[in-house]
Image 1 (cartoon, helix red, strand yellow):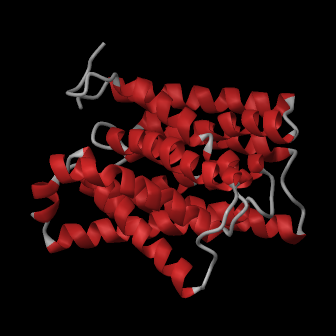
Image 2: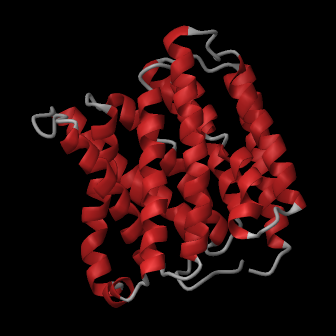
Length: 295
């Protein structure tokens, strides 16, 4: 098995990333706080944790970034912040299964925007994976899609979060190809944290006084969902195409639906199992296509 400088197999990293990001919806639902505050704590704590590492390992690299690269990192962080605001807000209106399915439609948007933003054409395996994976995602949420009212608004928010995630992935690919992982996640997570905390302060949202369970959820979001999950995907951006990363993210509805069933009793049906199988097949097809390409 081919390994890189970290001695972590590339596809194992994607698997760990899928498992870790699957906890995000659970922690967000358990946190008793405003969605923007939840997002701010998630990215803010992650930035504080990684900052000392960046100071010793990537200080010069970050300091020597060009103005253009700082602007690109800021823009990527802005879309990450918008992604979290929209998606976490959606969890208050629609089911976890519905929310994670819709927010993970980002492969559709990646496919539409990749050529215009990066000049990269999606491989045939990625196109096939996107089609199969999105079909699986739709099946997972087919018996759960809302007909109207507040749940429909939640669906819209989750879909908006998926579009923002696509821009975040595409912008990140451009910057990640030139930066070390530590430097990239520090400037990207840091810029997202700045945007989110500005919103928290400008809107006068509650910052302190949360119960132990909520604070534990904030920490879980930062350590597991963000630093482990998102960082695995950001690490992989240097080695894989945005199309494969986006399809791999479709594994999140599988994990989140299972956890939602166990913790919250949300319905988990044979239809969702069939959709999950399609998603896993999509990830395999995309990954197999990547293996044939030199990276």
